[in-house]
Image (cartoon, rainbow, N blue to C red; front, side, top):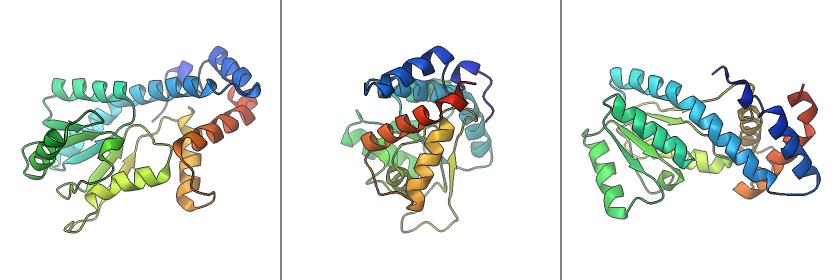
Length: 212
């Protein structure tokens, strides 16, 4: 997706300067600032994600759509309600009873979409769908792979497809590069905090280019 909001192009100049200064002094609160920008980028992708989702549903394709941030989930829920989309959600606060109900409703065709956070990356078989989509990129490739595998379980008889929404010329570029390196096995497996620190390092290293 092209980015039309210039404040999201690697953050505004003032915010990027602030993050660079914090990182250079070892202040890891810079990671919190990066998280805020990632969240804003996710929110910017929601309208396009909903448009794509409507198109898939019109073709008769149910979808499992993943996100990371609570605000992105809320925006997707509001948008889905406004468009009359039948959906359920499985996020961190979802009880086991509600989780089971949503999965069963999806597999039975009562709802056509599940919005899921990292809470949905394990222990669910969703073979009615062959499409997963990620609005937010997760920082650990194995987490994304686990999430996508929800539709690749035993009993799936169709090819599956995994969609990642990307906002060009933002820190999505850096995140994508890092995640795909992990997926390709170029670097050792790392947890989310380690990847966040590596992301900060790359942003600092590339800051001159970003701040032109």
